[in-house]
Length: 373
Image (cartoon, rainbow, N blue to C red; front, top):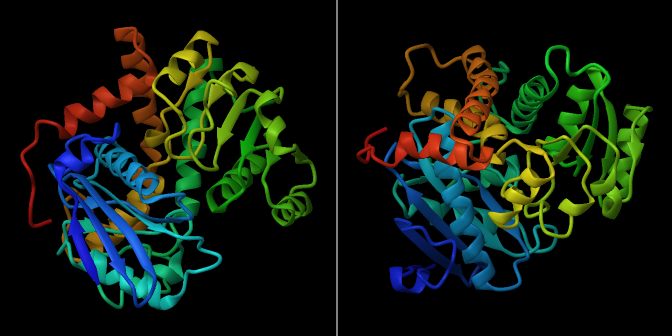
């Protein structure tokens, strides 16, 4: 296995470089693994963030993604009230074509080479089985099966979806007042693990749903499970007449081409990096669309795996027991965090995205690096 840390002057050529502590390139000819691990900031603790696998068009594209995503995890973990820094890993390749146990086991060795500075988890293109394979080579992996009691561990996607659902409640209450979920219509883009579970929560609440996905099979499945759901072609989801748009697919869906089509009151969804550029939030503001910052609303999953990790290493940084009930209560505080973001945005006359950044930076930027967690 060939491991190389990229130099700061190499990374400075990328617009998403933000003084990252480390970006490591990993190549394993034996398994075909080609990956990057980014550690952005460890002021609050070891860097935690998922392992993504996508058929990136180039190494440069993968580096851009790992820089952006690892920085986002620093902000997400800080705002979620976790004593963890931000990191991410990306594997270059189509997970449906080249992913196998040997490749993921090699990725576990790559994670282990950082000796605990980075803790990995599942993300787009990876799942629980991949975490099991990686765990053969490293202890710095979360999202592993639970102990059979339903306590902590396992796939965090339902918890992420619950957090997004809670965030939508906060946003609709802010926009419409009490009982805002009654008569609500939500357009959900992307029916992956999180998007599908979000639809379940909303459907049980009586919310009218319009959904889209590029996979016909999953559309047929949701229509069978939720007969009142309306299906829309992917290219038409941005112009749907609905109160809320919930992007739950890949990032950069809010951009100069899609925002002009939108007539939503609220954007609140699970996808990471929803804004293609920083100017796109200004475009939403100009259309009076309330934007719920993605890393604030989709923090449920990282909260879940953080509790799993602290339980496993027998370290409790919280003033209460590491139980599932405590973890669910922690996820429930996403609503309060979003309310704080809205209040700060109004007080300082700034966008909600900038308000979220200021809150997160006030937590992690001036903290001395924490070790030994």
